Length: 145
Ligand SMILES: [Zn+2]
Image (cartoon, rainbow, N blue to C red):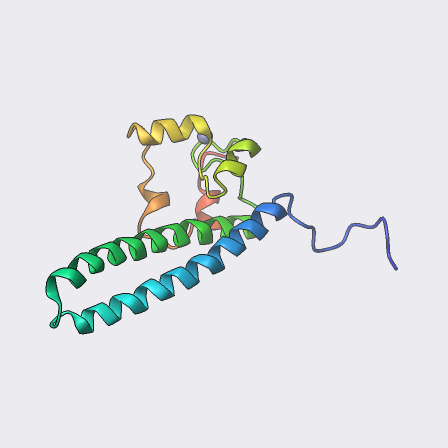
């Protein structure tokens, strides 16, 4: 038995968030799969029962969109835990308050930047759209250093 020495695999200080996010991810994948299957079923029934399945389809389509969006955020967060960028504001580079992360584990901005973001004062397209994840190489081109 070894003790006292630091192992190569250092457990992230955000391990609890990783576990929580990973669990949420697998739950969401199941929900999404179920909704997509239902949606497919409705599409094939659509000719028989147009109005009712139409409304149901809208609800399901909204649900799958929401799940996909959330899944994306969760996967980005898991990526950031892997690369060590998790818990750091993507805008100002400050650490995000842990209480905020507890409330919202997928938070990408500190409270201050989030407010600016919501007011449209923060340009975040590069973080939010067009890419699957925020990569380490992009992080290196920022204002740090
Ligand atoms: Zn910030």
